[in-house]
Length: 146
Image (cartoon, rainbow, N blue to C red):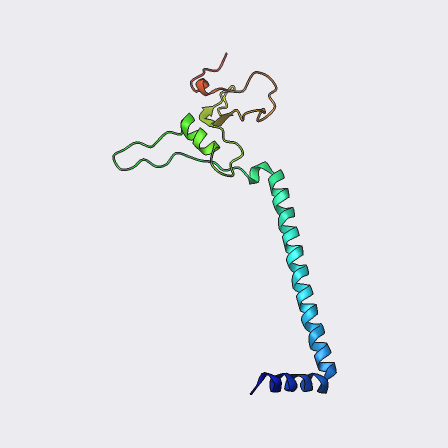
């Protein structure tokens, strides 16, 4: 079968059922337009969700803990060098150490226990203080007053 014969058959079939061909073409155009619209809407929603999640700092924080000690060895401490290495990793906005100290508060006959977190993100106070100052790295063994 030659190309000329194939083109002739195709043209005859197109002329024989014009409504079917118009409806098929309309369906293809409608399906393509719907697909493009859905892809645009989904990308817009994705960007909106990412923008809103960036506004919520608790959703973008990652806590890095020292690894488990190998058999017969000691675990590497997360020192200033490790904090600097993490801070310079790709997609990291800020990295700062957090000092975690178990504490027990004594007030009369009550002694609730918990942990005290000490952190100093660069350039901003992590929380407002009513009095005093934020703890520093060398305050790990500070004694309470009174």
